[in-house]
Image (cartoon, protein in one colour):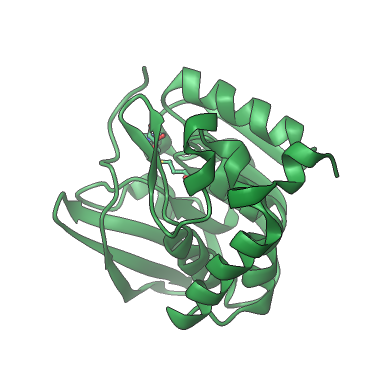
Length: 219
Ligand code: SAH
């Protein structure tokens, strides 16, 4: 790995190890998830001026009024998605700068990700190319509609909060598939795990969270 990816000083492995310890303290148990977070250079995904804060357990601005999600939330959502074992096809809504996408690409065979802001999608594409992920497909579009072409998905993860669960996402979930989604208005959002069964959907509350809103349409 070159020096830029490996990181130095505030982006060094030692700084990353501290983040992993923090995630464990906060309740993340999956060694797969902890290893993947540990080995994914988050500083690549933020502006150089913020690189020294990349391994703090906080959301950070990525431009266009959006944020890169807090590492704990990324880990929590990935862990919930993976609880039934390895994933084949995963759909992600809200690519942003591609950090969560990079995490998913290491725990799923194939990742499909949709972002409504084209400039951010281009950034994500560049970042994922730098890290050499080959199992990711990106689309500029409105995630409310899902990506019917490759459905059904055994995991769907949504990084922005609608006020109600989009019907298309439920429809594109495989039987035994899992959807992890924040739902609600700003200041009061529930992170839900929806599991599709033979005869319907089961809902579990995972956490109270704070995400940017899931917006209709594209930019
Ligand atoms: N997954 C990112 C988080 C990005 S923040 C990470 O790893 O950090 C949420 C993203 O959802 C923003 O980039 C926002 O533009 C996007 N978004 C909001 N509404 C959307 C929609 N309807 N379809 C697709 N993306 C949407």
